[in-house]
Length: 269
Ligand SMILES: Nc1ncnc2c1ncn2[C@@H]1O[C@H](COP(=O)(O)OP(=O)(O)OP(=O)(O)O)[C@@H](O)[C@H]1O
Image 1 (tube, helix red, strand yellow):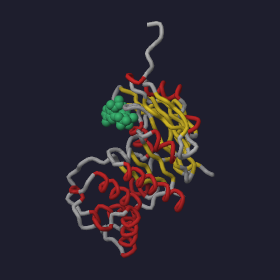
Image 2 (tube, helix red, strand yellow):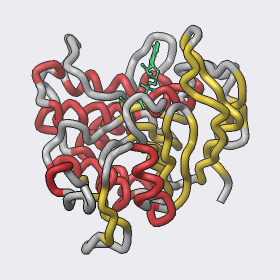
Image 3 (cartoon, helix red, strand yellow):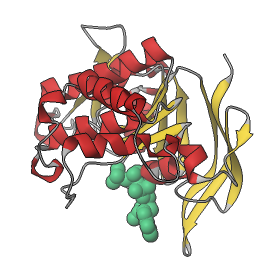
Image 4 (cartoon, protein in one colour):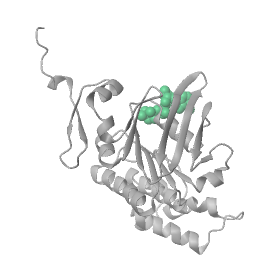
């Protein structure tokens, strides 16, 4: 399959601080691709570069073989949709209005929605299970509800690539699985490429076709969950003691944090 995303030798600095160093990888069309790594390793910065929000100091990004550089926001928004980290925000709109904003890259100069735009927005709300919330104020929703509304908005863009920054953070277990299943359905039904940042290694292992493990702005490892999630690589990346064994539900590694008090006493001490 052809790559939907090609990142070549990308570096990024904020002022004098370099946060991405010579990053290269590609993502196939319809792939579920998850970026993992410790805090501050550059995951969100990488997503910003991929989505055209941050411009790399050097290197190139291509979407479906065409350079990202120079494309207008409107054109870009028809190819790639971003679901940002959910934070409480002051948005004076109801859910239906927020979701419909996802159609703006397709609307005319007057910004009037067509019956087709409304139909797409309704389908997106139904897909993410937020139709009953349509008239509620967005900023009064729970974190999980807001997350699903932002995903519905992104779906309205009808993107070929969906980029999500920690979409399951602060969600309960059922909602975490729900969000991951929604993404899996988008991938398998529509062939949408899913690129996600996650701190949940076990969830990532269950859903990702491939993982990218970062540390200090560099790629430490990339490949299938089985290739990336071994304890030497993970302990090097995270600097803590982990147990890696087999997941009883799926044939992928399972990661368990080992607290200091659970370690056997050192012999000869
Ligand atoms: N706008 C900014 N200006 C200056 N430094 C920034 C900015 N955004 C991020 N950084 C720094 O860049 C580095 C990488 O941050 P980034 O948010 O990409 O990491 P991350 O892997 O997503 O972290 P986390 O897991 O904590 O969300 C960090 O040291 C951070 O402090």
